Length: 128
Image (cartoon, rainbow, N blue to C red; front, side):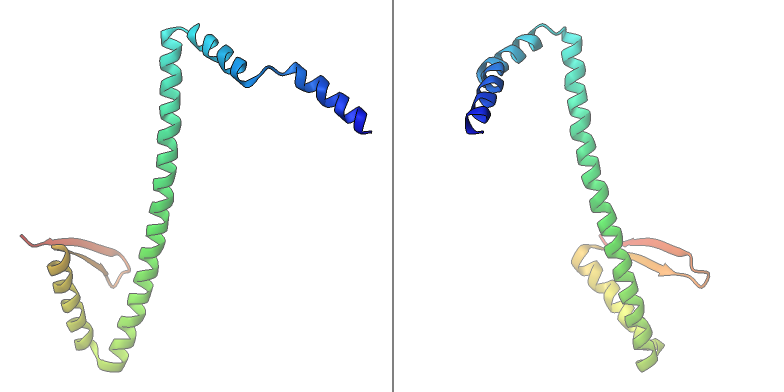
């Protein structure tokens, strides 16, 4: 069995060219391509790279949307609990403090509110 496997390996490995000669042949065949074909190959390669970047951005976007949804859920629970335990005036006061803190820290505040008909209302307040 060992001799048979060794013989099989020798037969198959001798049919392959060395790596350097394969690369040489590849380089030669690429040299024979027209400039237009080379440009098309370059563009195709760029498209593949850009598609990978787009996919990565889409995954990050999906992750951020999930995080935003989670934060909105937590905020709603905290507001409801604060209102039940302390009253609506404390919720309004906490919202105003959060708004001022965001403006001081980031220079703007995105007013993200859900109206009584469950539609979202977005507005951005900027400070100069």
